[in-house]
Length: 321
Image (cartoon, rainbow, N blue to C red):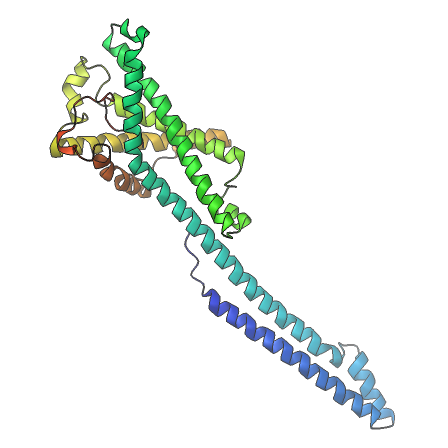
C-alpha cells in the first residue's frame, strides 16, 4: 500500500466551511419562514391564503418551507463525509506507520540476531560435546548432523518466537497510544492479536528458518571428507578477509531465498490456498535480503571479521535468515 497523500487538514477545513454554509442556510430558512408568515398575517384575501398554502404545503411538489432544511441537511452530509474521509486517511496513515516500524524492527532484529545466534550456537555445542552419549559416536557425519539439527531446531524456535514477541510489543504499544485496532487489522490484512494469525506466522518463521539453516549447512557440505566439500565447499565456508565476506554473503543469500520459499509454502498450506509452490521471492525481497545480510557479515564476529575461525560449530557459519 502507498501512504495516503490526502491533505487531511485541508479536508477538515473544507468540512468546517460546509457546516458554516449549512448553518447559514438554516438561518436563511428561518428568515424565509418569518417573511412568509408576515405575508398572511399582514394581508387578507384569497391571494395571501393561497401563497401560504403553496409555501407550507406545496402544490404537488415539495413545499418551499422544506427546501432550506433539506439543502442544509445535504450540505451537512457533505461536511460529515469530508470529516470521515479525513479520519480514515489519518487512521490508515497511522496503521501504515505501525506496519513500517514493525517491518524495520524485524529487519534490525534479524541483523543483530547474529550475536544471539552465535551465543546459542556456542552454548549448544558445549552442552552436546560434554554429553556422554555424544562421546560414543565415532562417525564425523553423524556428530555433525546431531549438532546442526539441534542447533537448527533451537535457533528456529528462538528466532520465530522472538519475532512474534517483537511484533506483539510494537502492535500493543500502538494501540496504547491510540491507533485504531480495526483500521490496523484492515490495513495489515489480519488481526495482529489473533492467536491463529500469530501461530501461522510462528510456523512460517520456524519452517523458513529450518530451511535456511539446512541450506546454509548443506552448501559447504556437512561431511568434511566428502568430495563435494573438497571441490565446492571452499566457495561457501567462512574464510578470512574479503573472500570470506563474499562467500559468506553468497551462502546467506541462497539460504535466505530458501527461507522465503519455505515460509511461503508453509503459509500457503496453513491458510488453505495451497499455491505456495509458485510464490518465489520478489525483487523487493532480494533487495531487503542484501540490506540484511551485508551488515550481518560483520555482526556475528564484529571484531574478528578479517580472521574468522574456520570452524565455530556451524559449518556454513551463517546464522538465521
